Structure formats: C-alpha cells, structure tokens
Length: 127
Image 1 (tube, rainbow, N blue to C red):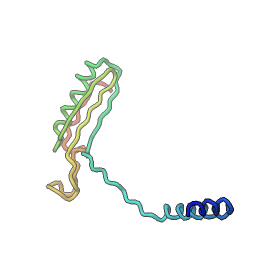
Image 2 (cartoon, rainbow, N blue to C red; image 1 turned 120 degrees about the vertical axis):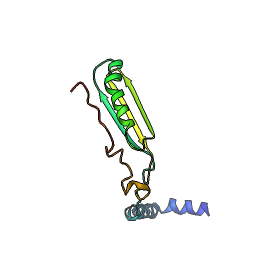
Image 3 (cartoon, rainbow, N blue to C red; image 1 turned 60 degrees about the vertical axis):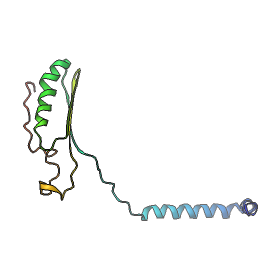
Image 4 (cartoon, rainbow, N blue to C red; image 1 turned 180 degrees about the vertical axis):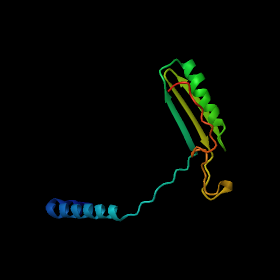
C-alpha cells in the first residue's frame, strides 16, 4: 500500500501538488470559520504601584514604599501586600480574593479595592 502511494506520487507530482494546495486552502478556510472563546483570567485581582525617584533606598523606603503599603493595607478584602525598595525605585503591590460578579455582598462589583474605593492615598513630600 505504501509502495503504491509513493509510486503514484512520484509518477504524478502535479496531482500531489494540487491535493496539497486543496488541503491547505481547506485548512485556511476552516481557521477562519472556527469560533474561538476567550479564556477568563482566574487569578486574584492585583494592584501594582511602581515608583521611581532618584534617592537612596532608605529615603525611598521611608517616603514612598511605607506610605503606599500602609495606604494599601486599608483597602477592603486585602489578601496580601508587599513592598520592595531599591535604589531609585519602589515596587508595591496588593492582591484581593477573586470573586465572581454575582456572589457575595458586593452587588455586582467584585473588585472594590482595584477600583480605588476604600483607599486613603498618601501624599508624598516631593512632586
């Protein structure tokens, strides 16, 4: 069977080329017709604040990272708050539990902390 298929392909290269082109065209058409669904993001809601200020890590920690982290701790349903300071930048983040939009007492608003509600934003001594 394989010997006859190979012999046929060797004797009729134009037929094989036409068959391959027809299969490629059918594949291209099928890709355009297939319905694709979006994959939902199931991770926790995160708020990330990245700040740059050309100062030492101690000053960044005292005047940027700490006020941001303490303000984030006041957000509702906070699960985790982290703050990292290095020379010239501060990286702060919080995560809240992932809730469906129809569950619980949120009235369809699952991520109040991500919307900024409940935050007491800190004012910084620099502009």
